Image 1 (cartoon, rainbow, N blue to C red):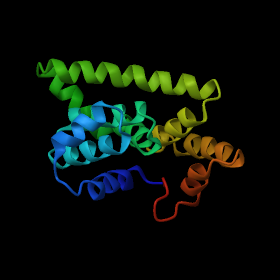
Image 2 (image 1 turned 90 degrees about the vertical axis):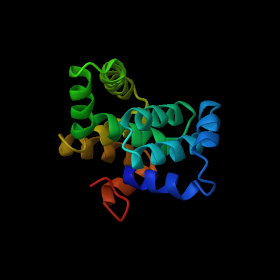
Image 3 (image 1 turned 30 degrees about the horizontal axis):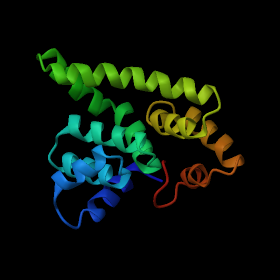
Length: 161
């Protein structure tokens, strides 16, 4: 579905409001806690922390975090913000920007090698700039039985389009 719904899910999961507890759980591999941290960081306009939490959640095996991460790192506004901060001397933004560029390349390569989750990430990453390529990838994944890709193609309430 729409990765912004994943942030909404993260907000709903945060019944305690204790971002630090979720940050610790995220660091220890709890993907849903990473979604909570990403949602809270996004509300606080802390894009570095948002992207890092999504990346950790994805590494922990959360498909929602992986899709959110793919969309976030391909978002022109997010990338532009990191570029401006980097140009203004914020080293952390430079490191994140470099990592994002490498990560996108890795995701595309893994997709070309047949990794279905990486292909779904690629479809989300391409949805803004190359919707036809995104749709082509989603159709292939849907034909292989990936329900998330089929939902994105339908463009329903939580579809990618």
